[in-house]
Amino acid sequence: MKKAVLYRKLEKKSVQCLACSWYCRISPFQTGICATRLNKNGILYSLVYGKAIGLHLDPVEKKPLHHFLPGSSIFSFGTVGCNFGCLFCQNWEMSQVNKEQNSERNILEIIDRMSETVTPEEIVEMALKQKAQGIAYTYNEPSIFAEFALDTAKIARKKGLKNIFVSNGYESKETFESVKKYLDAINIDLKSFNPDFYKKVCKADIKPVKENIKRNFAAGIETEITTLIIPGYNDSNEELGNIAEFLVAISPDIPWHISAFYPCYKMMEVSPTPYETLLKAYEIGKKAGLKYVYVGNVPDEKRSSTYCPKCGALLVYRSGYEVEIKDLEIKKGECRKCREKIYGVWH
Image (cartoon, rainbow, N blue to C red; front, side, top):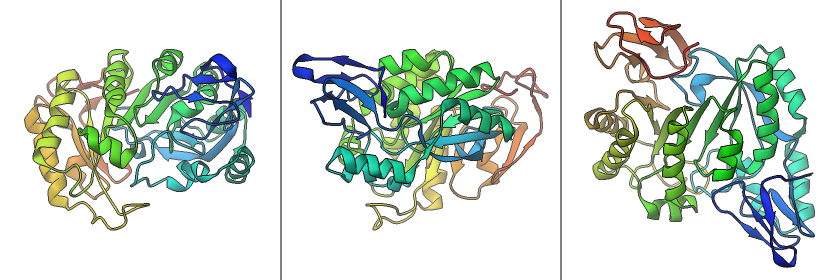
C-alpha cells in the first residue's frame, strides 16, 4: 500500500477521500466504497498503488475510441476494485470481489493474489517495448487508483506516449484537475439518463457523470461516450433521445458508441440486446444531430466506420478491429473530398 495524496484529514482521525465523486468520509481502519482506499490511524492509503491487472496490448478501438489514433495499439491496465456496483459488470471478478471482504487482511490478500506488482516506470517501459502509442487506464474506474494513474501518466507523457482513461465518469474535481494536463482522450460510460437506473442498477448517481462529460470535453480532452443498451432498462425511445440530445447540447462532434448487452454478473436473466434496438438507437442519435454514432458489440461494418458528416465520404473503414484509413487526411484531420474538419486526434 502507499499513502494517498487525494484526501483531507477530519476530526477523530477520520479522513475524506477526494479521488472520486463519492467523497467518502472514512473512519479509522475502514475503506471507502471502492474498498481500495484505507484509513490507517488518520492517514489514507491506496491499497492498489503498484498492483495492476490486465497488463497487455489492445487496439484503441476496443476502448472504444474511434476518433483517436485509429488502428493504433494501446497498452492497458487496471486494478482491483470500483466505486460503482453495476449489476451487469463484465469485469465484476476484478471490480467487485474485494468489496465482498470484511477485513483489511482479506482485502489485501485478494488484491495481492489477483494483481501483478509493478511500478509506473515499469508500466511505461512495457508499453514502449511493445511499441504501444499510449497507455489506457481501464477495466475498472481509474479515479480509484488516481495516484497510481497520475504517476504513470506523467512518465508516459515524458516518453512520448498518449494517456487514455476509460471511465464511468465519477472522477472528482480534484482528480480531474490533477490529471487533465496529462490526459489525451477519455471514453465515459453514460449508462442511462435515468437517475433511478443509476441508483438501482449501478449503485451510483448520474449527476457527476453528466458534469464530467462536460468538463472533459471543455478541457479539450478527446471525449467519446458509450451507452450499453439493456433491454427493458434503458432502451426506450425517450431515454435514448434524452441521451442523444444531452450530448448534442454539449457538442454534435462527440462520438456516441451504442453497445449491445450480453447477460453477465447479476443480470444473467436479461436477454441480449436485439440488433433492431441498436439500429433504433443509431437512428435516434443521428436524428438528434450527432455527427458520429457507432454500433458496437455486434458485427456492423457500416455503423462502426466513420463517415464525413458533410459529404458522406468514407473516412475510416472498420471491420471488427481491422482498420483502414480511406478519405481522411490524417495530418490535417479533415475529409479529403470536401475538407470538412473531423473531430478527433488523428496522428
